[in-house]
Amino acid sequence: MLTEECEALLARQFPFWDELTPGEQKRFCESMAPVHYDRGTSIHSGSEECVGLLRVKTGQLRVYLLSEEGRDVTLYRLFPGDICILSASCVLEAITFDVFIDAEEATDLLVMNSAVFHALADENVYVRCFGYELATKRFSEVMWAMQQILFMGVDRRLAIFLTEELQKSGGDTVRLTHEQIARYMGSAREVVSRMLKYFESEGVVRLSRGGITVTDAAKLRVLAGK
Image (cartoon, rainbow, N blue to C red):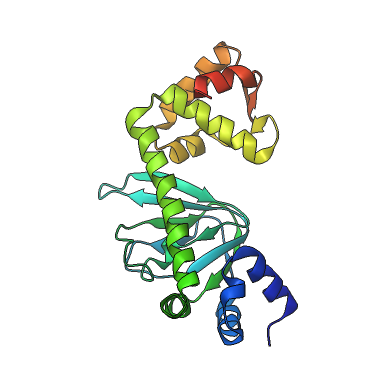
């Protein structure tokens, strides 16, 4: 029998929940297990792995590409409440590229068995549509990351990054190191540090050991093209 906590969570997170039969709901709930990952742990390493469907409870994940030379490019990050389907790449045949997923900090996940999700997707069109819609959303984020790297200057990319980070936190300070920002942007730390110093000289930000405080949000939005 489904627990009230599990049923409430899945009904809130998965729009196809009401389209499942009682038996499918039971299988779905029983297939999900809590897993904890320490900071820096590799969760998924390319298409050969099929960890399953991930829902972030606490913490943060980074999804990235890795070149043969060892250079990585961040595609997007996942925060509490987000669902990752690229970790279940064996479920959707349309996902043909390798992605890597790391825990950026201590992270608690709910992991759904990939075989169960695959079976439900085969049996229920609503589950299958959800999978493809979620994959499409993530692919759009991948394309946005590639567009910034290929076609935008570092100044605008940095301004967009800082603007989006402030929207997530709701404050005026981004508490990330220059190294972290460079990794998330797919740039070099030296380039990011140089651009941040330029932003500081223009009165847009103030740099400190505690992070980067935006002192002129309006000017930052102009730099971001918003």
